[in-house]
Each structure stands twice: as structure tokens, then as C-alpha cells.
Length: 290
View 1 (spheres, helix red, strand yellow):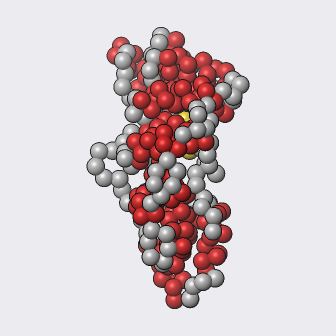
View 2 (cartoon, rainbow, N blue to C red):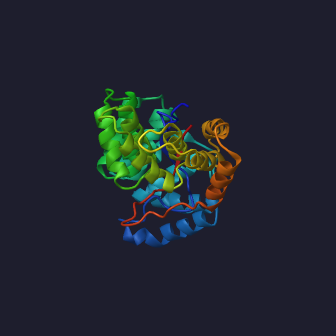
View 3 (cartoon, rainbow, N blue to C red):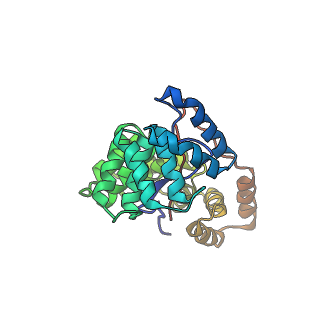
């Protein structure tokens, strides 16, 4: 069975428009209009939000600029306009706003409103990563792993994945586990790979669930257990992972009817584990993964 890791160019995108990227307002005098804009976003009235955000953004309100960029990027309340999105992201990013820096990096990586420029993408991911944005740390790790806009360095990929994984960011936990499984940038360690895959899987990360199923099916870092493998493949497949669906079919060929019944029961009863301790701030972004 093939190891299915998050797509090398997987990046985080701005999406959930029902909330602001960051709620810290530097412009106290403009707080009320911005709060009205947030309320408009929350109820899905993007045209009203756009109307409220524009004067704020023109008045140099950083968060409004970043949020306005999201509206233009995704065509909410206005025709989609990547050039306008870039304009507002640049203004917010230049002032050190990490959420806008991440989005700007994505625009450069994907060539949205600008020619593809992986060096610029990596530059903006790094700036946000140094501000402790876990999404940017994850993205920068991916850039290093695959040599996109930076010299390929598995050691640097591991470093950035670990920083994000230590904050319980599931996609980074999954990718760091893959580095341990393959011995990239670290000594190969199946036990550590299993530990990290489990942490991400317990949060509902579908790619990690498939990978954990593989570890159980092959006995890497943990005793072979097809019932556990079936459960994790099933959970991952239920989230739309076609590789997990294939792996599930392969596991079924090696299982008894009683084992299958046990695995199905476990999958039905499984619930994601809440993240405990100090919570990380997940900004309004989406993951583009394959």
C-alpha cells in the first residue's frame, strides 16, 4: 500500500468569511464600523460588508484591508477580482499582518492576479511563520520539503513542521510523521511516526487517518492490527479520501467477518478528540490538499 501524504503544494487559503482574520484593532476610532462589517459577514451579507470595509481599508485599517482582500479573492459581494485582492493583501501584509502575508504567499504560489513566483511565496510565508502563524509554518515546511522557492532542505522542512506540530496543528503533525516514516531530515523512526499520525488522526485529519491505517496494516512502529487499520481507513474514506477507500478494500480481503464487524463498530463510535491546553488561533483559511 502506498503512503498517502498531503500534496506537496498544499497551502492554506483564506475562506471562512463569517469571521475576521484577526480581531485586534489598532484603529479604535473605527471599531464600530468594523464590528458592523463583521456582523454583516456573519450573516452572509457580503455586499453590505464590502460597503462597510472599503472606507475602513481606505483609511488604512489593516484588518479591514485583509478582509477586503478575501472578499475580492473569492468574489463575495463583488465580482471576483484577483488584482484587487492582491492590492489589499499587499497593503496589510506590508504592515506585518500575518494573515494577509499568508494569503499573499498563496496568491504568488498559485499565480492568482500575478505570475507564479515561488520565491515571493516563500518570502511571505516566512514572514508570517516568524510571527508564529502555524499555517505559514506548515506552508514554509512544504516549500522546503519540495524545494519550491527555496533550496530543498528536509532538515528545514522538519524544523518548520515541528514548530507547527508542537502547537497541535494536525496537517503539520501528519507531514512531520511522514518525514519520520521515510527518514527525511531525521533518523527514520516508525514509532514516532505512529505517535504523530495518531495525534493528527485523533483530531480528524483524514490523510493522517489513512497513514495511521497503513502503519497498523503493515506493522510499522506498532503491532499489526487489521481491525484498527480498517477503522482508520474507514474514517478517512468517509471524509472523501479515495486512497483510503482503496486501502480499506485491500484490508477487507485479509479480515474475517467478525473482525470487520468489530472495526465497523469502532468506526461508528469514534469521535474526534478535542485539543487540550492553550488553543492555537486558526485564522479563516481553508486547506487545498489532494
